[in-house]
Amino acid sequence: MEMGILGLPQSGKSTLFEIMTGVKIGAHHNEAVVRGQASVPDERFDKLVEIYKPVKATPAKVPFADVHAVGEHPWEAIRQNLSGTDGILHVVDGFSLPDVQLSIEAYRKLEDELLLSDLLIIEKKMEKLAKMPRKAIPTQEAAQNELLPRLKDCLEAGKPLRMAGLTPAEIFTLKSFSFWTIKPELVVVNVAEDNLVFTDQFATEAKLTEPVMGICCKIEAELAGLDAADQKEFLVSMNIAEPAFGRIIRAAFSLLGRISFFTVGEDEVKAWVIPKETKAPKAAGAIHNDFERGFIKAEIMSYDDFIAHSGSAAQVKSAGRLRLEGKEYIVQDGDIITFRFNI
Image 1: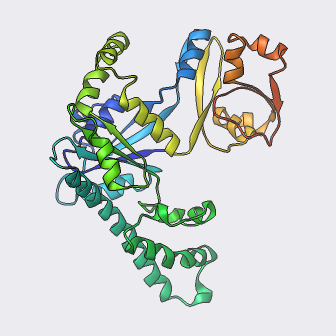
Image 2: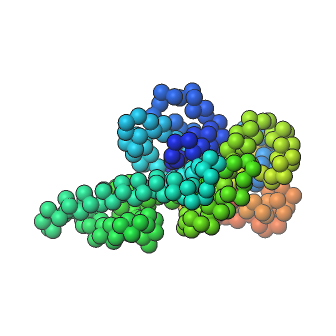
């Protein structure tokens, strides 16, 4: 799981990367790509840490990658380093451009590059398959060949592949292509501190199907440099409920189709990251392969039940709200789980 950050030069993408991950780009100026992880803000996790006061606290994290795309072939650097990412965070300049339409044009400029890149891949593949005898085409490529004309039409209409109405099975069939526009995308508009409504104007006029969020990287960079107490005071003075970068991290986490479940105790409280619709044995495997191989049952209480019973597992159990679930149970976001296994 990884989110690639894209944006035109001077859009603020590297600043946002630093704010979210704490990794300083300047310390990696000779590297083509810089990677870092952002902790996912979660009030539930914070409350569990407050209750258990563990030796170690490990929140859920989202990996981000930022490319230092300069020189004669910047797009090639992006293609080489971000093509394997699972989603795109597209940062748009909304602070230096004097008009919303100019920001929309800046967004479209990079999106057009992504569309063109995908279109070239499709045309090249279709040309190759057209030269092959039908019986000589492998089964996997034959399935892809059925989809390619539809994808080509979508791109030529100026629409990303995520709008092609593909089923999960069809998306899996196309996985080997690493298409750009099939990935989920989050659009983040970097606005000036005296024009925070710019994001709403951008979203209204751009009419995107992708989610759009706003941030003022200038303010958020100042905020990220403060300790927890000073951050709280700063937010109150600015009449802000929470840092925008926290909301963006959560949105990226959700966009990638991830949820988290918790394991708790005095040694450690940890948020484990798994895909949505994961069954209990596979979730156990996120902790250790042996947990999945020897899975017997999952002892589960929901976070809401836990809090409703004074943060006491014993009270949850006595109230009959502690559940034993088997191999077919689909883990829910916020479940607190103890796995029973035998190897």
